[in-house]
Length: 174
Length: 173
Ligand code: SF4
Image (cartoon, rainbow over all chains, first blue to last red; front, side, top):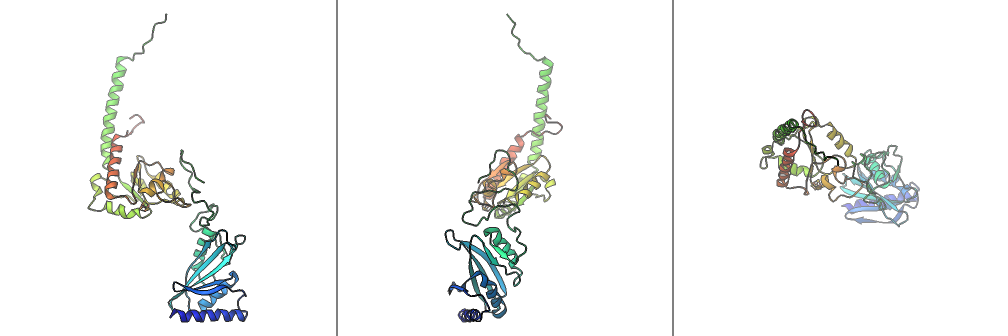
């Protein structure tokens, strides 16, 4: 049942690209199905358009998550990953886009999904991805004054940034 | 040749301070005995150790036998701060504030390895042991500790309270 929807999504996105509705260079890798999820690897500029098509034409009404993957040594270094769920078709779609370390910017999906605001804040905390269009990227799980992004692979695991100064006789690591 | 000076206290003074010490020791024993059976815990419960905390508070283990059954949810009314579970750096200011709001005399228990040493967490989030934030009187190992271990910890704390000095009027008495 999922396969039929997935075909329709793919041909719709390909058509949109041909007609110039979304920026070119959309598909970086051929779309595939992984664990029953349709995976689309897009250019960062194409994500917002694809999400709009998914939401408005295919009933992907649940924004599940946005997170990132750090690939040290790869260029571009980060892969931002979005998941959507359709309560109408009962299938999931994953969008991926690669962004460079120098300007880790991805489009914000807050105009489409209100819940994206919080998850984008978390992803900004942990990986330092900047979601353009999300005006409120204050720390949500971390605290003001925290330096660095702890889920990046180059963040030292033993580094401590205590909020309360340690008692006498204890030293901060890192 | 100078005469060697042997310092001798007047007989009266020695007897007086000995009597004072005797009374103050007995007073410490009495107050310690009373205090060790009225430990009102404040549960600062943050993580999975809470499950074992519930087990140890329930009927089969019955911490009321040790006078430590009735949790007070106001730090001002409690004597024992039980830190049950992982404390993160973001939570540390709250822990410190709760500790500072408790009235003297007060004791702190680190319940489980997370509170004791951070346990297996070594990352940006977890405090590697709450003794970095507040002074700890008793550490209970285990992930989570068995209720028997907790009861052993409470009994050790009782012994410690019984042995302590309990100044009431001045620092000497
Ligand atoms: S010591 Fe184990 S059971 Fe207790 S809070 Fe830590 S991880 Fe959870």
